[in-house]
Image (tube, rainbow, N blue to C red; front, side, top):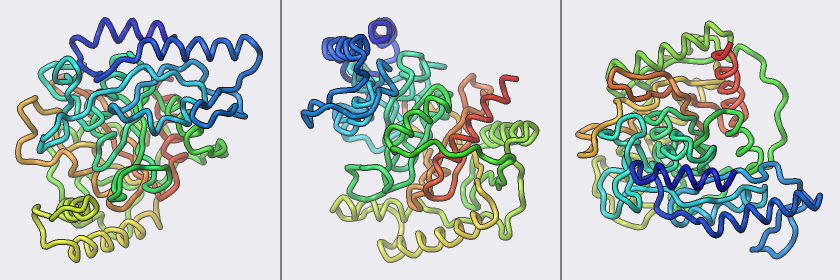
Length: 378
């Protein structure tokens, strides 16, 4: 499996530019080590950083995985201990960029695998491309404003952002959370079980009560991503996976953008030079949205929206609209969220359906995604 993944990466990455580094020798060494453990009947990984055997079987023995950025290996310990083989570091935006929905690999700018003249999204750009192109089945990401979910939507794969604070994160602002890019909900669920150590939940009762909002009350998404996401919702309804319910109050969040920018600047220890009056207003907006979301989840288990407000843009930049307009509210509130493939636009690029759940309900998101995939294949 590792050798095959490395061959695929060698063949494809000259065009895709999804990787910053490829760890060929280390990956082969690690794969050989996992093989030896299995051949000897000792399905236990060796945690070299701790210097002691890992005391659980290898649930992901030999699975090739890519990590986000050159420092992504630091947060991949649970995957390595579970038997994964890390094959390389994926691309992220280059230094000094004012916008984050693109990537820069070792060979050049990262391209969308569906259309090379379009961006894959970001900042987990290479991670989404590596999974979408079939180079690896899993890739790690981090999501500070939509950095897992947007590239998942624009590359046509599944992307999960965990509840903020539930998994370790190096982000000092508290806005970013770890996540994963995967080919399927079942693969993402295996990742979640390994990193969270959460026991598999009981079967989810279907249909799940859900609320649909095309714009969260403030965004101005293009008609096509809205139509694609809404069509995906209708398929879930027809399959008996979700049941749309009317919220007690309209879904009207305050625009989280200025608050996110102010909190990000404050958490990073630099002056806030973005729009908005500053931290006091940021905290007010966060508290207001938290109350409104608490009310919404008091009567429903899921909130459904488009993942991104536009189709993938070109490499020249995103223009005057934030690609994060439908995602970063949930970095501010901390809710777990998942982007599920929702079909293709007229430009041939994928779009995503965005599922948001109450805090700590990652298992619900993954269960709904699994049912969506299973029933779509019937």
